[in-house]
Amino acid sequence: MSEPNAQPLPTDYDRDPERFRAGVRTVERYAAEGDVHGPVAERLHAERLDPVLDLGCGEGRLIDPLRTLGVRAVGFDTSPTMLAGVPDPRVRGEAASLPFDAGSFGSVAALYMLYHFVNPKPVIAECRRVLRRGGLFVACAPSRCDHPELRSVLPEGEPMTFDAENGPDMLRECFQDVEIERWDGPHVHLPDREAAALYLYGHGLEKAEADEAASKASTHWMSRSEAR
Image 1 (cartoon, rainbow, N blue to C red):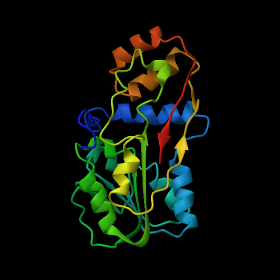
Image 2: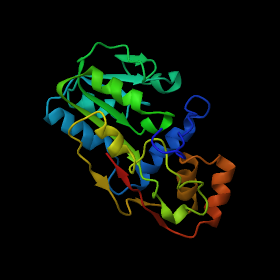
Image 3: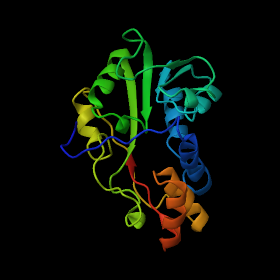
Image 4: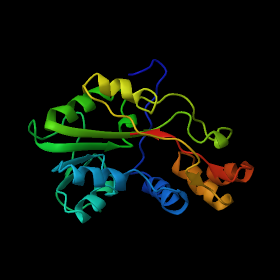
C-alpha cells in the first residue's frame, strides 16, 4: 500500500453496472474536453505501440477508438458484466497474474483501475513484464483534490491506493522514465440538479443519496483533476 491510510476504491461493476455507465454519461454530456481515452488511443496509434493490452477495459471505451484507428487491442477485465459488450479478443482474469508471455504487448493501458487494488504494485510489475522493450505503460487516476465544490456531499478527499498524488512515485519504482500529464481545471460543467445527481451516483453514492445530495449542492460547475 502506498500510504498507511490509503484505501482501495470498492468495485460494484457486476452488482450495479449502471453506476459505471452513469460516470461515462456524465463525461459524455458535461465534460468540456471529453476524457483521456481518445488522446491515449491517438498516441498509441501514432507511435505504433500495438498490440495494446487494455487492462480493466470496462465496456470498451479505449478499445473502440483503438480499433477505429486500426490498432490491434486485447480487452482484459475481471468483470463478466463489463466484458459482455467488448468484442474479441477479450480475456477475463486477474490483473496481478496476467496470462501472457513476457514482451507480448507494445503498450499496456490501465485507465481508472489501479485504485481498486489494496496494493497496485504487483499489477504494475505485471504490466512491465508483458511489455516489449521500448513499450509504453499508460495509467490514469483522479486526484484526491477532485471536485472540491462537492466535498460537503461526497465522502472523498482521503488518499486512494493509486491516485494522482501517489501514482507517479509508485510508477517510478518500476519504470525508469515517467511522464506526467495533468488535467487541472473546471473540466466538468453540471448545469442542473439532474446533472449533479448523475455525477454523484457515478462517484459512489446510491441513487437516492445522490438525488438528496444534489438538492443540497449550490454550485453549477465541478472541476476534475487527474494525472495520466
